[in-house]
Image (cartoon, rainbow, N blue to C red; front, side):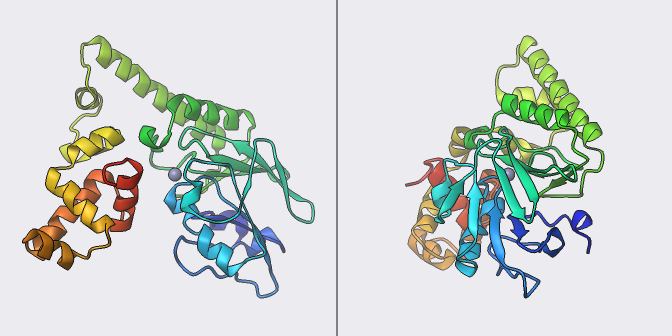
Length: 294
Ligand SMILES: [Zn+2]
């Protein structure tokens, strides 16, 4: 498996002491193995604090206590209680021999988002800056900022990297083309929003409907911010979320509320969909963050 073709930067970015060829894919929450027995993990570089990028920090720190964990400071760093080494824009990290990575603060998708440039090869590890085949979520309630995102895309494009290694999806071998398409697409959407506002549409669902043809109503939650998502949960759903946060199982919740476990499951499914959460734990984390429950 060649390093540049393996796209190993999935949950956390691992830089091994020996060489980039020894990079091993790591995935959050799963046991972390370093493939080469003679390799030693010295640095863990995290692109941003979203769960699918930083949840591996705790097991990594436990498995490799000598490794330094680096991250640009963010509001939710306490979610991963490890001794973070703060990254700053322009920092140079020497990983092995004379292999250098330069830190680029690229906010927008998340306030603490960074990319890492390996100048010698023109390769950039870009976290969630771009994902081939789909657009990147700008979660306003989580500190996302479209203006910053566009500036970050332009900054990366101006550096003319040879290739991008996103955390999700295939390697980008034509960064200039892809970054330009992202910028054009976002600006087209911006223009459509301005048009919709001019046409008198003032709320988010009306604007979304005018922009996206045949929009599936099930997708509407994706357009709503944290507060709106909170408003979207029914009283019953909030009640169930609170019980889940208190550590109750489906059976406990069913017993407490005098409903069947099937009904609890159905409520939980709706809660996950509305909060765009993958798991119950994730839903509880979002609900606590957004102060939907306490
Ligand atoms: Zn992300």
